[in-house]
Length: 204
Image (cartoon, rainbow, N blue to C red; front, side, top):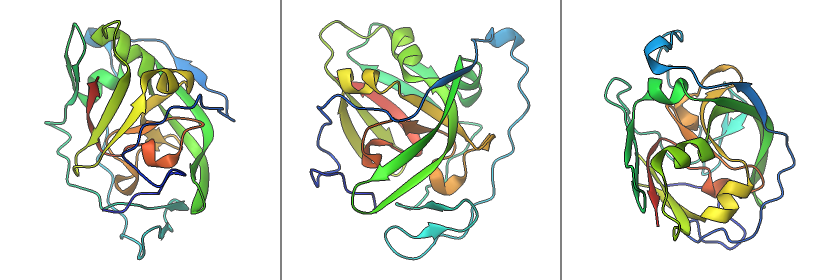
């Protein structure tokens, strides 16, 4: 499966350095009570043709594509948070959308391969981790994708990046090729860590 290769050449290696985000995270909305959350229904996007090559350009978005999008059923989709947590989570797409919302225009950098700058929005990673009540000895996060890809980021680096779980691109649902329904956005951290089609966060 194709992924951008981080500077250490290992997509599975941990990110240890403190990130230096070059974009501002903006709060777009506070948390909505789920019972009263009346967000508009999301229509599953139509998949654009898969461009050729490891890092082909998706002409419908102007973004590069790595990996092959799996089929994700939005009706049954869940994001689980497991591992060193006191309160394991099993979140639906709409539960994520009712949480606080942040956004940014930020570059996704695959060192030596490409840089894509675009607008993302979604749920703060810190908010989800706090809900899961991660344990005091937790040190790292493993992001697991629906296509089997996984990547590890140290907890301190993930928090310092002000990362979030994006479900919108440019004000619309994430395109399928770029992670629908949910992907990780970690400003200042190599793009290989921005796992697409996210289904699980393991706390270690």
